[in-house]
Amino acid sequence: MDRVIRCHCGFEARAEHEDGLLGEVQRHASEAHGMALSREEALLLAFRSELDDGAPTAIPRKTTGQTDGEGR
Image (cartoon, rainbow, N blue to C red; front, side, top):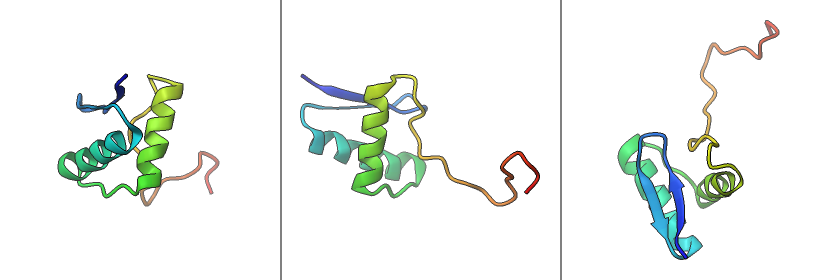
């Protein structure tokens, strides 16, 4: 049975085995979004996707100038 991960851009990664799926996720992140995901980051995305199909499919990156909402 294929495992599937969907990216917010519309791309779907499909593979029968975890290693193939993680490779597809890493390749897509690099080619389409300029993100170099480690195996662990790709695995996290796959895990989150399995738990909740509506989960974000990108690793959030903190940008400079953001606050935690409490003015710190």
